[in-house]
Image 1 (tube, rainbow, N blue to C red):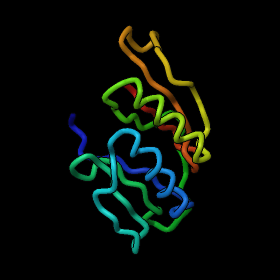
Image 2 (cartoon, rainbow, N blue to C red):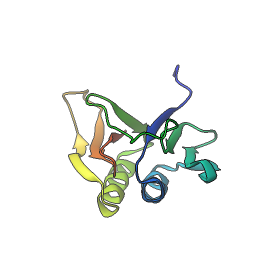
Image 3 (cartoon, one colour):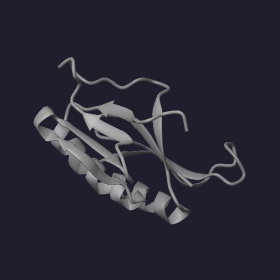
Length: 124
């Protein structure tokens, strides 16, 4: 993959960190860098692949229509666990887990919004 990492800004740093701590563990992803004094935390399996942080320009974080982040899972059970964890931690469902043949015959995934309204996905 040509990308090193992606970032989503938040207006609710402490709550967002608690949210991502809870939902990413379902995918075997954890904190790999904690820069909380600057309101930034990086997650990954081995190195920082996903950052959640307060905006650097100190302006309110905003969501972008048409932008979403997809987390690759090892299996369908992780998709289900991710979806359940997001709902338990105040995420909002935007497409339940299961097959989505409109994407491919082998695709299984779910779509949710995080606490700031960013569109995130887990897919197998």
